[in-house]
Image (spheres, rainbow, N blue to C red):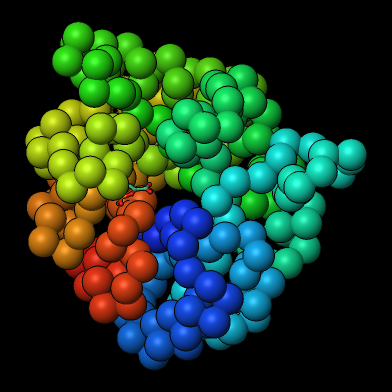
Amino acid sequence: MRKPIIAGNWKMYKTATEANEFVEKAKGLVPNTDNVDAVICAPALFLNQLVTSAQSSPLQIGAQTMHEENEGAFTGEISPVQLADLGVKYVIIGHSERRQYFNETDASVNKKVHAAFANGLTPIMCVGETLEERESGSTGQIVETQVEQGLSGLSDQQVADLVIAYEPIWAIGTGKTATAEDANEVCGTIRKKVAALYSQETADKVRIQYGGSVKPANIEELLGMEHIDGALVGGASLEVESFVKLLEAGS
Ligand code: PEP
């Protein structure tokens, strides 16, 4: 059985004060259960304080991106070594906004996924198609290529430990959700690709999230699908109440 993982992606929202207030409030409300992983991927500025304040609570803290090198002359960047040293557990890699606005490619995603594992971080690797690609019927081919290139060179164990987030770009922050059936179909395609590249055993272990306008009203249906093992959530992770409802649905 795969353990569901609900991860909030705060993007570039919240001040340090608001971030602290969220975690202090959420700590007492997050269901204390072994049945769901609860993660908040916060702006890098707050990771230090949030790791400390979330200690001894079920809440785990993740980053939203990182550089692929452990150190170097990369002004403004944050390294996997620095994240791991803070006690950060997860890192989102290749979010569509990073691909779109910061020129991330499948090749750089692959380097970052390797770097995350090398430093004990669990990558949440994002894949997904644009509206144009969906309408032209190439969704399956697009995500298969992203998966194959993103996973290149990883071991079976690393792939089994990885989290893949299927996020159709047209559904992110738009209020448009893929139907649960459509989302499940693409997550199934991803699992099949992992089985072809690795083994069925590995494919059965990898957790695949859906992301794109997930909210308390649609989470249960999505989580009820065979291949959907959680959600990567933007907007609905910004308020404690809705984030907790998502976790309750997963637990
Ligand atoms: C996201 O940021 O990955 C996301 C899915 O956002 P939203 O839930 O707001 O669509």
